[in-house]
Amino acid sequence: MRILHTMLRVGNMERSLKFYTEVMGMKLMRTTDRPEQNYSLAFVGYGAEDAHAVIELTYNYGVDKYDMGNAFGHLAIEVPDAYATCETVKAKGGSVSREAGPVKGGSTVIAFVQDPDGYKIELIQRK
Figure 1 (cartoon, one colour):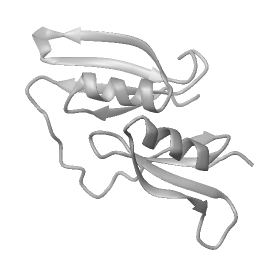
Figure 2 (tube, helix red, strand yellow; figure 1 turned 90 degrees about the horizontal axis):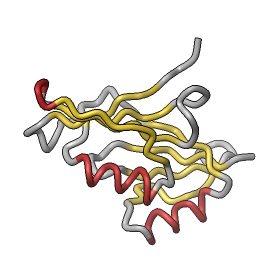
Figure 3 (cartoon, one colour; figure 1 turned 180 degrees about the vertical axis):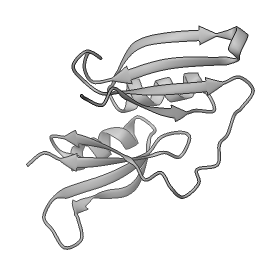
């Protein structure tokens, strides 16, 4: 068994694709448009779906915003350098909500960024 994907509902597919591909450096794996069912999908990630987990972005026609609720926490991505990744995210117009630095009570370097819909992404610096 393995995790295949995590689905996130997005309010604007173009805006989300730009963030995940241009700001976060993911690749667009595939898309599906289902006009009869009023939704579109895009799968993004860092590697082929047969070996890596990806993110499924779901746009439901006519819905441009979702309530975040308080149950979902964040996605986590390993990066070689959290400090440099934060600078790259900011330079490309992305939002850093917690600058890179050691986690409280530990030495692991983390940071948090937010996608255009407000989903949090934790950057964890590779040891």
